[in-house]
Amino acid sequence: MTLEEQYKRLKFNPGSQTTGTVISVADNSGSSYLEALRNIEIKLATIPAAFPEAELPPAPVTEGAEALSRFYMTLKAAITAMPEAVNDPGFSAVILDRAKADLTIINNGKAAATEYLKTVSSIEERCLAERQKAEEEKESKAHAAGTGTLTNSLREILDYAGADPEDYNTLSQVINTFRSMKDPDTTEARGLRKVLSDRFFSLYREVFLTSLSRPDMPDPVRLFLDFGFVDPSLTGEENSVRLLSMSKTKLSDPARRIYTFREWLTMIHRGQRAPSRSSFDLDFEEFLREKKKNHEITEEEMKQRLRNSDERVKYELDNLFTAVMPVVFGQVTSFSGFLKDQDIVGDMRKALLTPDMLHEALTNIRRIDFGVFRRESLFADPDNGIKNMEVHKEIMPDIILMPAFGTRFSMWQEIEGRKYSTPGRFFLPIMFSGDFEGAITRLAGEFRWELCRRIQGAHWNDISAPSVTSEYYDYIATYKRNSELSQTVKDKIKQDYSRARNQIRTMFAGDYEDWIRYEAKGLPRLNKVARRILFRYCPFNRGIRESLGTNPLYADCLSKYNLKTGQTKHRLDIIIREAENAGFTVPVEVQEEMAFLEM
Image (cartoon, rainbow, N blue to C red; front, side):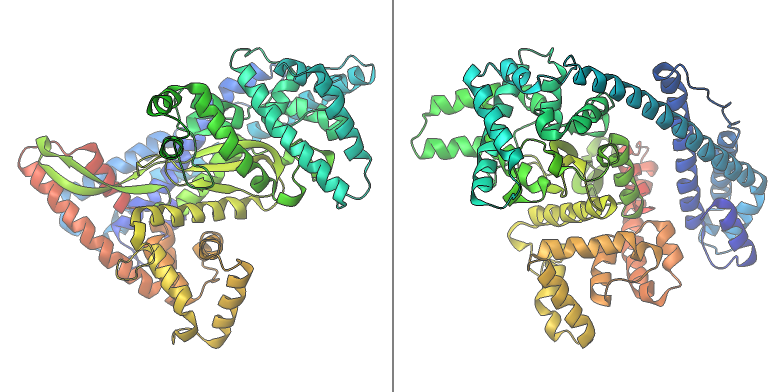
């Protein structure tokens, strides 16, 4: 809902909303407008540098930014002058009436900025496509002449790793034999896939460890580490050339916690990240303690390995890498490690998971479920009169792109080590075939589930300790005798649970996907019990809540949510007023918590 639409709604029905909604709509509209302006600024700086031939239209006038500032000043002045009227249903209409001219400028500026951003983004995409096409044609001709960058990829990768010369002949023979097979499901084909996957993991380890001392890696080596490519004979010549072109685009964005697996291993080697947990839920230190306990290593050896960068990387490769790769590939039985033309579905360029694509998808989820990546923690600032209080801090997950063309995402761990304030880890194939929006939303749902389980510990399914996991577990465990549910609904729950292979986390992630993708738009997909649980623990933002407020399906949930949140805000407001009255400075963390409760 735009500010102009809100104005019209309140003008004709001033008793329908309160000032809080005006502030919320202003925040949403204003933040999206300012984000568009920032993105325009970035595009105007990067496109001419990358594509001098691009002709960009003049940027739109951005006077809406000043209008937005005036609107907030009008709002603040009105609230300051009449604080007792803030919750008066007609007050918001008065504010909007005073700022009507500015609202028009804001909306027009936002529309112009959004349209301009689409235009320049389209120009950038076209320039990139034309350049990639030219590079692909050039590389294809060179490859046909035997002089292309990827002509001797397999030999170049093995030489880089310092492999035995005989290794080339052996692996080439296995690849050629595998390619010539017409039936991929024979016993011989399955055996060859096992040989290929084993060699893939060992070669990846050799190549990466070599890259630590030889960062000037040739293109085939880089393609191997980032995409799993080994040779055009396995991937296909056209796909190989296209892959080379794709590799020259931006594959990661560390500022947004998005990394290629090669970059991820480098961070572990530098000590910037701890190795991931194994399939047995052991981190690196716990793994070494187990070996010491079993008298496989001494105390001194354990300490040395903990400090050894290569050992940390080897643990990640031997435990995480070998476990996650078949998972993100999507079909464990047909996994062979090296990228094959049979694995590639559709256009590789459209399958590439770009940092912008991933960031936008997570941002869209956060706009709806504003608490999805927030953690409860205790905050205290005695110097400013703040005793222990709960705050919700947002901690975005690390996203690691695995060298595979796959069909699944993996929510591997919800925290790093034992600290609840550390980011989760999501492992995704760098090229993906499937419903991206659904997959990333289910991933967020799985993260919510596992984080709650971690925090609740042994009480994760104890209904006497209310949480999203305990209430949802109780709902699934007792649905057959739940009088609130009709027989038709019970039959559907049974079918859905069976499709989820009786895995309650998978069942919850499916309901969470429906919650974000459909229920947020007022399109009912869940039954009343599941809806009540998700509304309580995964509430929508204020704008969505208000728009659903008139719908009887959500009215009771919204009433309970408003009551609980109102009580929390009241307690926080008392803390803030007491601090201000005592002459203290209200900490930023407290202000951010109040902003969180206003979302």
